[in-house]
Length: 126
Image (cartoon, rainbow, N blue to C red; front, side, top):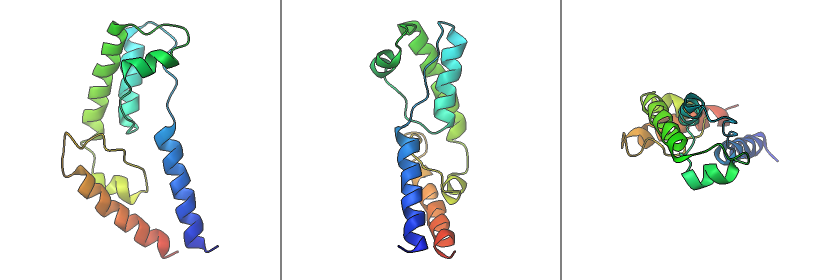
């Protein structure tokens, strides 16, 4: 198998791991912990989780509607920050983009794709 194919497989695997992995929710009932958790999720480009999904993963039963609201507020703050970055640089560095900015900046995906084209051009020239 060629080096190009190996690189493509490795990058695809990393994309799948990044896209499917989720951080563990806070083990507390402190609003700021849930706010910070939501913000961090967005800063990593992750999709916002529903209250049902977070609740299902909250084995200790900390999550309440109020804490979910804190999570959402944190997520919105992190998303605002994430979506103001240069999308072409995000793509050029080979980091995955899961579409969280599409409703904020319709050109974000296009800029990301331009960066990805550059990333693949550089990667395939090795």
